[in-house]
Length: 191
Ligand code: GLN
Image 1 (cartoon, protein in one colour):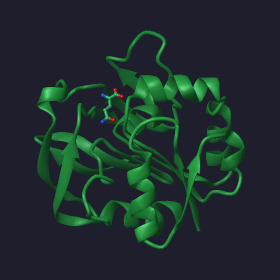
Image 2 (cartoon, rainbow, N blue to C red):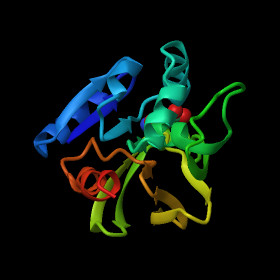
Image 3 (cartoon, rainbow, N blue to C red):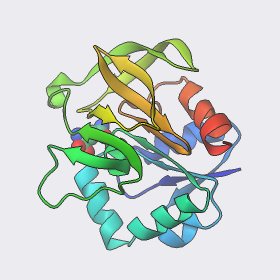
């Protein structure tokens, strides 16, 4: 199994380390040509406007959509969740997403940098006491019919899955807990 991590900006190194700890071949993806032989792609947290601009520059939009159509699973964390969403509220003018997953997210919904926080989450299929790290996180404002909400924080959806798509608005790569990475590999990629 080969999992790519989009390595344009943000917390990609931490995802690569988590994947390697799970004995998965992890690829730092810097060019669209590298998408060809991947089973899954992680779009990391960071700054969605910066990652989006670099995706535009390196022409990632169409190849990611195409490869997903051909069976490549995609998981977006935080800024990555914004980039996979069908619709982004409070986006900066001209900000573009991949429009892959039938979710509507609101950028910076939990507040500004000073409002970053941690919370114990209960996640469907993953269990209790999952420590979620939220950094200027978006939230998932609404989901389409085919989307399963995997967890909520204070009544708001913070993780969701739709077939071979996964979105988490917190940062599973910043804690030592491999449960979400394992779930992506075993259930989302292999579905
Ligand atoms: N607020 C950031 C954005 O809009 C996301 C923050 C993060 O990925 N930690 O892209």
